[in-house]
Image (tube, rainbow, N blue to C red; front, side):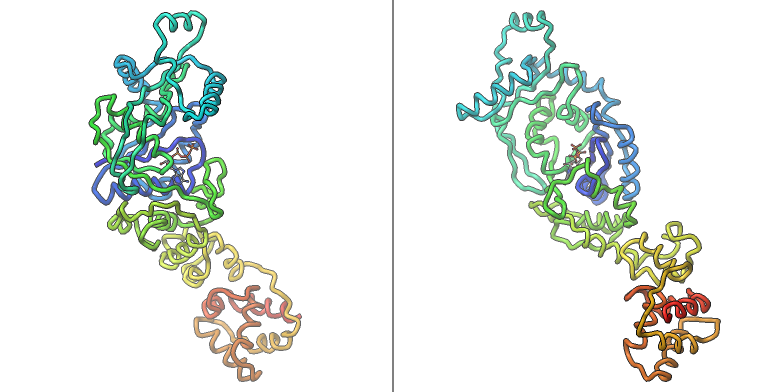
Length: 443
Ligand SMILES: Nc1ncnc2c1ncn2[C@@H]1O[C@H](COP(=O)(O)OP(=O)(O)OP(=O)(O)O)[C@@H](O)[C@H]1O
């Protein structure tokens, strides 16, 4: 078994693209198959080297290792052979119509209530007419003559699927400048690199019908590939994701401080019969089943991702995050705060609370209480019992109970209404810092 993820390097990959990469990687891992990363860079105008690097980095960050790596731009000679073969069998035919001519024909067909597909006029061109066109300086581009048939397959996600080829224009596979289009390059690669399962987005369903036809024209058996089309992922407003707006790019999530395990766990199960849970790649792969993926579009929900991220951080040991913590942060700090933040990037604030400077609020009505608290502040050394001892003494001295005891202290010392246990924060702050903040807040 062999699978591939085949992105075009035309922008930063987003969560929708990543969902396909994860589906391929997990399916391959589940069945002991091979996972190939293929860079579909035949479109020279839109492909950029920096995006090739970016997608390798982003996939590696997600923990998706590939067993093989292929670039379409390295395989142009293979496509040239396939082009010759299709020309020789008469399946590729030269075309000379300009964009304007095609647009005019389309409009005419719409007026005549005919489907606006290519009319195959060039297929009926005589050799003399072709010679005449070339003598006039025209260079042909090449279309593939589709079969007059319905192509059907058992989709591993969508179930029985079919594409009626007579309802589609014969696709252009070679441009006038001789460069090959993705539609052909992809088939040649899938055949020659031994791909068995093509798992990709629903946007490719029509392509699949066409590509099965091309594969057969190149000598492949009709059942050469198994197909799975996953529904597209939409943004929170139900809009389309795009590589050109990088709000939901993998890069942006990484820079925001989200854990890769959270992204993978979330995307692996989003829009499936299984609830997202914080699981390792092996655990996810063990139960991965394309049959459990829903057939309708799924929406990306940042709150769900953050909830998962929080759960993952809660389980993460100090050593695993150490390098990403603020400089000087200790294990005690990590254990105190990890259950109270959605992302590692929020830790900066809590590090300032315990080891740096914050601007504590002035608590107008609590001045007297805070000064009492200052007077009762125990001497160091401090430990996890210090908070209890201090607040018990305060309760007895002031007659206060419940929230009225703790809340003014929390706000004065952290500047926040909520947060990690004060019991854990207090020893990290130390007496001098606590005393200074009480004085400021009491003013
Ligand atoms: N919103 C989406 N949800 C799920 N999968 C998607 C989404 N958009 C693209 N894909 C899938 O991502 C994979 C990589 O495709 P590709 O690199 O062509 O992405 P693309 O976002 O469509 O980019 P481009 O605009 O450059 O064509 C394909 O399997 C494609 O079906």
